Image 1 (cartoon, rainbow, N blue to C red):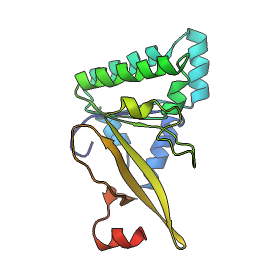
Image 2 (tube, one colour; image 1 turned 135 degrees about the horizontal axis):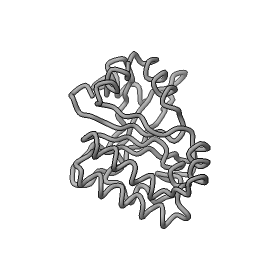
Image 3 (spheres, rainbow, N blue to C red; image 1 turned 120 degrees about the vertical axis):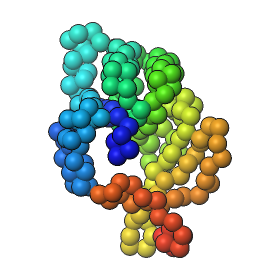
Image 4 (cartoon, helix red, strand yellow; image 1 turned 45 degrees about the horizontal axis):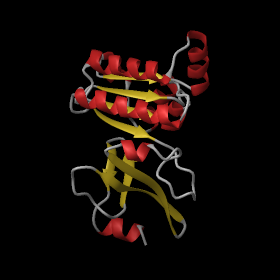
Length: 194
């Protein structure tokens, strides 16, 4: 959005008003981007999505169709889908979910829309996703950590997979500010991870 790239943010956990409020806490005002047609907020709590699905007989494939239609309609170059675990419940089984993810990825790639899809990980389980299929479909996997150092915690990310490119093999500490997400470099980063 900062660079004039229109985008779509889909949440299956939070209402658009709650997302706007969350963004405001970081100093980000989303309304101007929405008013300019550069940002579309979609979704809402899963219980409402599931209830709607029951009423109209909608499926996960229908939701994928709606996502693609919105991306195409606004010429979105970026898409974030927060809640693959919730999204998976829109499909009858794991195989159908995996097929749906493959379709979503293929169609977004055809539209040259870069996407980030979030998935929950069960702490202590060692997997990269809750269902174990997301990481195989994705071109890249980035794991977020909340690392402890003495009495403090720091946010870090780790690139676990990135098809077609060489990538970092270490934790990268980052911070979230009103200017966005900033990777910390150098001595600060090294000392935080000890």
